[in-house]
Image (spheres, helix red, strand yellow):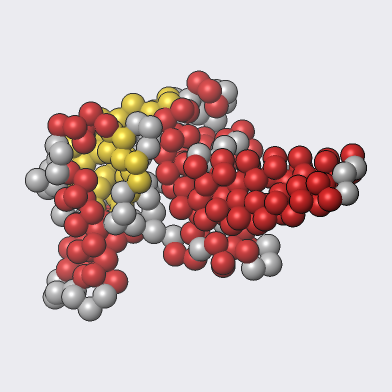
Length: 230
Protein backbone atom coordinates (compact mmCIF):
# COMPACT_ATOMS: atom_id res chain seq x y z
CA UNK A 1 0.00 0.00 0.00
CA UNK A 2 2.92 2.36 0.69
CA UNK A 3 4.50 1.90 -2.72
CA UNK A 4 3.40 4.75 -4.98
CA UNK A 5 0.99 6.33 -2.49
CA UNK A 6 0.96 10.11 -2.97
CA UNK A 7 -0.85 13.13 -1.61
CA UNK A 8 -0.63 16.92 -1.72
CA UNK A 9 0.23 19.19 1.20
CA UNK A 10 -0.63 22.86 1.60
CA UNK A 11 1.46 24.35 4.42
CA UNK A 12 1.27 27.76 6.09
CA UNK A 13 3.06 29.08 9.17
CA UNK A 14 0.53 27.61 11.62
CA UNK A 15 0.91 24.23 9.95
CA UNK A 16 4.69 24.47 10.14
CA UNK A 17 4.46 25.39 13.82
CA UNK A 18 2.51 22.16 14.41
CA UNK A 19 5.13 20.18 12.47
CA UNK A 20 8.02 21.87 14.29
CA UNK A 21 6.37 21.23 17.67
CA UNK A 22 6.03 17.54 16.78
CA UNK A 23 9.77 17.34 16.01
CA UNK A 24 10.69 18.97 19.35
CA UNK A 25 7.95 17.56 21.60
CA UNK A 26 9.80 14.60 23.09
CA UNK A 27 12.71 16.74 24.22
CA UNK A 28 10.54 19.62 25.47
CA UNK A 29 8.22 17.18 27.26
CA UNK A 30 11.16 15.70 29.18
CA UNK A 31 12.41 19.19 29.98
CA UNK A 32 8.94 20.30 31.08
CA UNK A 33 8.50 17.29 33.38
CA UNK A 34 11.91 17.95 34.96
CA UNK A 35 11.02 21.63 35.51
CA UNK A 36 7.58 20.74 36.89
CA UNK A 37 9.04 18.31 39.43
CA UNK A 38 11.86 20.65 40.46
CA UNK A 39 9.78 23.81 40.75
CA UNK A 40 6.88 21.86 42.25
CA UNK A 41 9.13 20.89 45.16
CA UNK A 42 10.43 24.44 45.44
CA UNK A 43 6.88 25.78 45.42
CA UNK A 44 5.92 23.42 48.25
CA UNK A 45 8.95 24.43 50.31
CA UNK A 46 8.40 28.13 49.74
CA UNK A 47 4.69 27.92 50.62
CA UNK A 48 5.51 26.07 53.85
CA UNK A 49 8.17 28.66 54.65
CA UNK A 50 5.71 31.46 53.93
CA UNK A 51 3.15 29.90 56.30
CA UNK A 52 5.81 29.50 59.00
CA UNK A 53 7.29 33.00 58.67
CA UNK A 54 5.05 35.17 56.49
CA UNK A 55 6.70 38.02 54.59
CA UNK A 56 6.39 39.84 51.30
CA UNK A 57 9.71 38.36 50.18
CA UNK A 58 8.61 34.78 50.85
CA UNK A 59 5.24 35.40 49.22
CA UNK A 60 6.99 36.78 46.14
CA UNK A 61 9.32 33.77 46.04
CA UNK A 62 6.37 31.38 46.29
CA UNK A 63 4.58 33.15 43.43
CA UNK A 64 7.73 32.98 41.31
CA UNK A 65 8.02 29.22 41.82
CA UNK A 66 4.31 28.79 41.04
CA UNK A 67 4.86 30.63 37.73
CA UNK A 68 7.89 28.46 36.93
CA UNK A 69 5.87 25.34 37.82
CA UNK A 70 3.12 26.44 35.41
CA UNK A 71 5.76 27.03 32.72
CA UNK A 72 7.13 23.51 33.26
CA UNK A 73 3.65 22.02 32.89
CA UNK A 74 3.11 24.04 29.71
CA UNK A 75 6.42 22.81 28.30
CA UNK A 76 5.39 19.22 29.01
CA UNK A 77 1.91 19.55 27.52
CA UNK A 78 2.12 22.12 24.71
CA UNK A 79 5.41 24.04 24.52
CA UNK A 80 5.31 27.61 23.20
CA UNK A 81 7.38 28.10 20.05
CA UNK A 82 9.00 31.39 19.06
CA UNK A 83 9.44 30.96 15.32
CA UNK A 84 10.50 34.60 14.89
CA UNK A 85 13.80 33.71 16.56
CA UNK A 86 14.20 30.83 14.08
CA UNK A 87 13.39 32.84 10.96
CA UNK A 88 16.28 31.43 8.93
CA UNK A 89 15.27 27.85 9.67
CA UNK A 90 11.63 28.59 8.83
CA UNK A 91 12.39 30.36 5.56
CA UNK A 92 14.77 27.61 4.44
CA UNK A 93 12.09 24.98 5.07
CA UNK A 94 9.54 26.88 2.97
CA UNK A 95 12.02 27.64 0.16
CA UNK A 96 12.77 23.92 -0.16
CA UNK A 97 9.06 23.25 -0.61
CA UNK A 98 8.23 25.74 -3.32
CA UNK A 99 7.32 28.90 -1.38
CA UNK A 100 7.51 31.89 -3.70
CA UNK A 101 9.55 34.86 -2.44
CA UNK A 102 10.11 33.14 0.92
CA UNK A 103 13.27 35.14 1.52
CA UNK A 104 11.38 38.44 1.65
CA UNK A 105 7.79 37.76 2.71
CA UNK A 106 6.81 38.12 6.40
CA UNK A 107 6.79 34.74 8.15
CA UNK A 108 3.02 34.92 8.59
CA UNK A 109 2.55 35.01 4.80
CA UNK A 110 4.72 32.01 3.94
CA UNK A 111 2.86 29.26 2.08
CA UNK A 112 4.16 26.10 0.44
CA UNK A 113 2.53 23.48 -1.76
CA UNK A 114 4.27 20.18 -2.36
CA UNK A 115 3.59 16.52 -3.08
CA UNK A 116 4.56 13.60 -0.85
CA UNK A 117 5.14 10.19 -2.43
CA UNK A 118 5.71 7.07 -0.30
CA UNK A 119 7.90 4.23 -1.50
CA UNK A 120 9.65 1.09 -0.29
CA UNK A 121 12.80 3.07 0.53
CA UNK A 122 11.27 6.16 2.13
CA UNK A 123 9.30 9.20 1.06
CA UNK A 124 9.80 12.04 -1.41
CA UNK A 125 8.72 15.66 -1.07
CA UNK A 126 8.56 17.32 -4.49
CA UNK A 127 7.88 20.98 -5.16
CA UNK A 128 8.66 23.54 -7.85
CA UNK A 129 12.03 24.26 -6.22
CA UNK A 130 13.36 20.94 -4.95
CA UNK A 131 12.95 17.18 -4.63
CA UNK A 132 13.83 15.77 -1.23
CA UNK A 133 14.21 12.03 -0.64
CA UNK A 134 14.17 10.86 2.98
CA UNK A 135 14.91 7.19 3.79
CA UNK A 136 12.71 5.41 6.30
CA UNK A 137 15.61 4.66 8.62
CA UNK A 138 16.13 8.41 9.20
CA UNK A 139 12.81 8.56 11.08
CA UNK A 140 11.58 7.54 14.51
CA UNK A 141 9.01 4.75 14.21
CA UNK A 142 6.80 6.23 16.96
CA UNK A 143 4.08 8.50 15.46
CA UNK A 144 3.40 11.91 16.97
CA UNK A 145 -0.17 13.24 16.89
CA UNK A 146 -0.55 16.93 16.08
CA UNK A 147 -3.33 19.42 15.46
CA UNK A 148 -3.38 18.78 11.71
CA UNK A 149 -2.46 15.12 11.43
CA UNK A 150 0.24 12.61 12.32
CA UNK A 151 3.99 13.12 12.13
CA UNK A 152 6.97 10.80 11.94
CA UNK A 153 9.86 12.86 13.23
CA UNK A 154 13.56 12.60 12.56
CA UNK A 155 15.47 10.20 14.79
CA UNK A 156 18.19 12.49 16.10
CA UNK A 157 19.63 10.33 18.86
CA UNK A 158 21.48 12.52 21.37
CA UNK A 159 19.66 15.61 20.10
CA UNK A 160 16.52 14.33 21.84
CA UNK A 161 18.35 13.25 25.00
CA UNK A 162 17.62 15.49 27.96
CA UNK A 163 20.60 14.18 29.94
CA UNK A 164 22.96 14.84 27.02
CA UNK A 165 21.66 18.34 26.43
CA UNK A 166 21.83 19.30 30.11
CA UNK A 167 25.58 18.68 30.17
CA UNK A 168 27.43 21.95 29.78
CA UNK A 169 25.69 24.14 27.23
CA UNK A 170 24.90 21.41 24.69
CA UNK A 171 21.26 22.55 24.62
CA UNK A 172 22.40 25.77 22.96
CA UNK A 173 23.73 23.83 19.96
CA UNK A 174 20.79 21.51 19.36
CA UNK A 175 19.99 20.95 15.70
CA UNK A 176 16.36 22.03 15.41
CA UNK A 177 16.04 21.55 11.65
CA UNK A 178 12.70 19.88 10.91
CA UNK A 179 13.39 19.23 7.22
CA UNK A 180 12.66 15.55 6.66
CA UNK A 181 9.74 15.15 9.05
CA UNK A 182 6.97 13.11 7.42
CA UNK A 183 3.56 14.78 7.68
CA UNK A 184 0.44 12.69 7.18
CA UNK A 185 -2.51 15.11 6.99
CA UNK A 186 -5.60 14.18 8.97
CA UNK A 187 -7.70 13.67 5.83
CA UNK A 188 -5.10 11.25 4.41
CA UNK A 189 -5.03 9.24 7.65
CA UNK A 190 -8.83 9.12 7.76
CA UNK A 191 -8.98 7.79 4.20
CA UNK A 192 -6.32 5.15 4.91
CA UNK A 193 -6.77 4.02 8.54
CA UNK A 194 -3.88 1.54 8.39
CA UNK A 195 -1.39 3.97 6.89
CA UNK A 196 0.18 5.08 10.18
CA UNK A 197 0.90 1.48 11.19
CA UNK A 198 2.31 0.70 7.75
CA UNK A 199 4.70 3.64 7.89
CA UNK A 200 5.78 2.67 11.41
CA UNK A 201 6.44 -0.89 10.26
CA UNK A 202 8.42 0.34 7.23
CA UNK A 203 10.60 2.51 9.48
CA UNK A 204 11.28 -0.33 11.91
CA UNK A 205 12.15 -2.67 9.06
CA UNK A 206 14.46 -0.14 7.40
CA UNK A 207 16.27 0.65 10.64
CA UNK A 208 16.81 -3.06 11.22
CA UNK A 209 18.09 -3.65 7.69
CA UNK A 210 20.26 -0.61 7.12
CA UNK A 211 21.39 0.17 10.67
CA UNK A 212 21.57 -3.44 11.83
CA UNK A 213 22.76 -6.66 10.28
CA UNK A 214 19.79 -7.64 8.17
CA UNK A 215 20.93 -5.95 4.97
CA UNK A 216 20.84 -8.10 1.83
CA UNK A 217 23.20 -7.96 -1.13
CA UNK A 218 22.47 -5.07 -3.46
CA UNK A 219 20.25 -3.15 -1.02
CA UNK A 220 22.80 -0.38 -0.49
CA UNK A 221 23.05 0.23 -4.22
CA UNK A 222 19.28 0.31 -4.69
CA UNK A 223 18.89 2.72 -1.77
CA UNK A 224 21.67 4.95 -3.09
CA UNK A 225 20.02 5.06 -6.52
CA UNK A 226 16.70 6.04 -4.94
CA UNK A 227 18.31 8.77 -2.83
CA UNK A 228 20.02 10.20 -5.91
CA UNK A 229 16.83 10.16 -8.03
CA UNK A 230 15.25 13.50 -8.85
